[in-house]
Structures are given as C-alpha cells and as structure tokens.
Image (tube, rainbow over all chains, first blue to last red; front, side):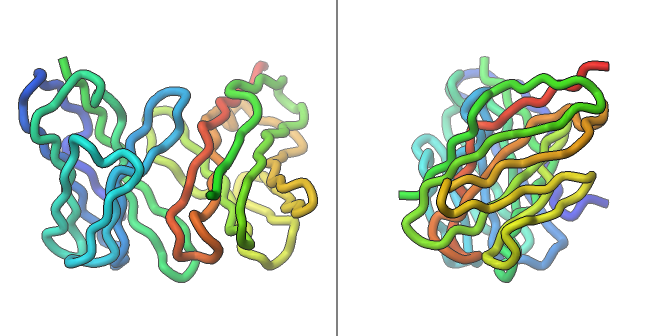
Length: 112
Length: 115
C-alpha cells in the first residue's frame, strides 16, 4: 500500500459544486501539504499543516480550505468549484529531519 | 525571497546521450536543494538532494547533480540516457535554509528520449 493515499484519483464536477479531496498517510510525519500542478507552472503550494492545530496558507489559498482531522489525515475542500480550479492536486508529507517531501499519486480534478 | 529557475521546459536527447537539465536558484541563506522526477500519471519522487554536505550528489537511476555556489546552480546530469528516463523533472529549493522551510518548485523540464 502507498504511504500517502489520495482519494478520489479522478473527479469531474460542475461549477459551483463543493468538492473534497482526501489524503491519508502512514509515514508518521506531522507535516502535510497540498499542492496544485498546472502544465508549465510547476507545483504551487495551497495549504500546509505542521500538526493538527497548526494550519497555514500557501501561495494560492484563495478558493480553498483544509481540515486536519488527525495527524494522518489532511483534506482539501473547494467550497464552490470554478473551471480555473481544474488541475492535478497532490498531497505530500514531509520528513522534518531531511526536509524530503513524499507525494501521493495525485487527484485529477476537472470543473466544467 | 527564494526562487528556482529551470532553463528549458522541454529537453530532447537520444538514447545513450548525455542528459543535462539546468537549475538555478536564488536564496539569501544556504539552501537545501532537491530534484524530483514525475513519471506519467504518477506522483513526484525524490531523485537526489543537497543538504550542505558534499557538493556532488549522487541519486537514483544514475543521476547526479553538483551544487555550485558561485554560479547558484544545481544542474542534473546523467552520462547515458535511457528510454525509461523520459519524465518531467522538477528542481526545488527550501523557502529558507535548512530542512524546515517550505519547498519552492521550478516549473519543470520535460525530458524526451529518442531511440
């Protein structure tokens, strides 16, 4: 089983719908991240969390919210999806000693 | 502020040829630098990292990178390309020195390998 698991892997939705992307990890890391990947733009940080009570905005947090339900779970919500939120979303955990990020396999979201 | 520039959004090489993917960084403090690879329909995985120890860093699958402070560069190389190296490669720098800062990613370089 993967260390970082994202669900759903693919989702098509309509403008205005609420969407939740879920992430769970078995690496035991306290740091978790949500990134968005768009062609030609690389990865951009949406939100990150250092523990259950410590959640921080990244560079592109507008239109998104997150919830850290437990050390192992970090979910990303789009309250009212819009077409320019169509992207590939990655959850990651981070080893605090080495700085290395460990990524899930991604959730491809299409907003029509 | 820290930043990363990857020169060339697409690089094409022949099988067996040298692979050179360029990365330049900007950092006001000693950086930690990373190269990640993304194969089609997969997440990113770490190729190698520089954390202020040896300047020549060896990674998985025959890749290596050299940290050159004077040139603010961390270019990725592999002596002989293989078809399986076709992927997208991302350079990243920590937001501030050490392992604690958030990673800032470059825009990526897609590597194609021709038979």
